[in-house]
Amino acid sequence: MKIIIVTGRSRTIGNFYDTLINPIKGYFKDKNINFQTIHFADQVKKDNNNDNLYIGIFNHVPLTCMPKNYIMYVIEPLNNIDENMFNQIKNASQILVYMKNMLSINENIIYHQFSYHKSIENMYNLDIKLIKKTRDLIMIGTINDKRTKLFNLLKINKYDIFCPNIEGYPRGIFEKEQDILLYSSKIVLLNNYYKNDIQYPRMIYNSANKIFFIYILNDDDNENLLDDVYNNLLVTCNSKNMFEVINYYLENEDKRIENVNILYDYVKNNLNVNLYLNI
Image (cartoon, rainbow, N blue to C red; front, side, top):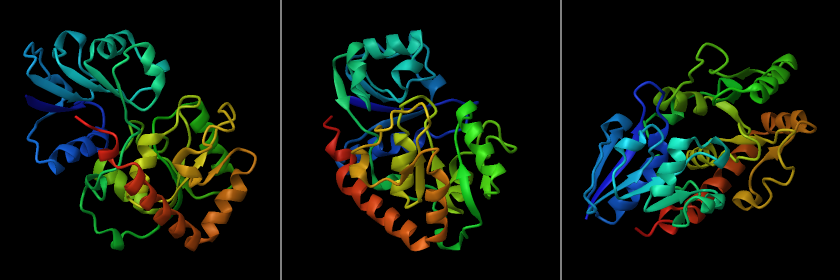
């Protein structure tokens, strides 16, 4: 069987799919299994050969171009799935999912909580030791009202915070430029775009790269949403204690270093891609 891994990048949207696909590539490389890579979504063409197994992200691939035999990496929550994606999931041989509610569409699931592989560590070969912590706080990600409100609240309270999506880069920054920004901040702030949809991709990437982050629950999130997530090792807060938690970690670098080392060990040993995949 021929294996084709689909990164599924768009040519018009900034790329972060490599950070999700690299652990899957690493899984096959570690087992000395050969595969071909298709980087862009518009390179995926209809293929009726059942001996060709496609694995990857198909968000930007039209249904008419989908191959016959494929494992779909579902990276969107159920409430953000359009008709095209619904049918892609339904027709897939198997689906890689981080939420088991996809069972209602396709029962052939591989539970895959965005996983660790050494290939997502320092992907752009930066000289990390030379990058100084020049910012206190950063927020990265697509903006909505909740994130804008959070940013403005911190800004009004005189925090040194930067969000590229709000300040000059409405489509965001990606790849090497994003990593430089992550490493140059004392604290990365995470919060949910969709209600109760945990930011697993950013959590695994930050943890694998020893980037300290605080997870801020929105007022509409379940207050127990992060209970038992990452073995309760996350630094979390909500709107009521946000300033207190942020101030504490801004003032205590040793606690930030302690946390990133603990989280790194946890994801490396407990969220390794080899514990999820058996393809």
